[in-house]
Figure 1 (tube, rainbow, N blue to C red):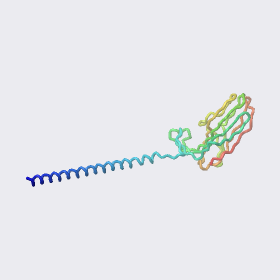
Figure 2 (figure 1 turned 135 degrees about the horizontal axis):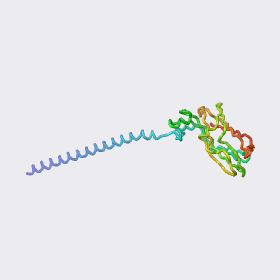
Figure 3 (figure 1 turned 120 degrees about the vertical axis):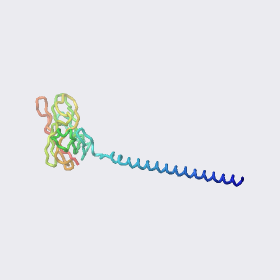
Figure 4 (figure 1 turned 30 degrees about the vertical axis):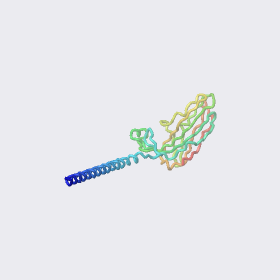
Length: 210
């Protein structure tokens, strides 16, 4: 009887040991599978991060994507033309990649160079003064002479009835690549009174763009 009991106990112990080993193997397999899934998920996410990276010099505009070549926000060019205080605050040159829907506004061109000036204008008198910095001429070191694009400029010109202020951007379209434009000359006719008499001479200022 004693031998039978011992044999039975030994058999039970071996069975239990076998069950324990099986449980451990299954756990290891599950762990390996989970790690494998995590690795695949991480690998799948990596390309998404690369796609999110963007060029800090590229901006979305109303007409496409704009690649900025040069930008200065603190020009601080000021002058007084008769009763008008005139300040040029900013300058920017860029290349605009025009989206298909907007190309009709740019003579069906796919790309164009933008030159943009930000200005402040103030009439310091009580009289009505006519002044048009938004209807100006620009020349470049690349030999271009271009007129401002009235379709895209802000309303910073016209009749200033008494002590009023206007601020906005004046836009020019150039053929040269932005990197080739290192100097511009901004030419504005002087203001005039209600009788079309000039109150100041033509204003010309050179602005570096590099």
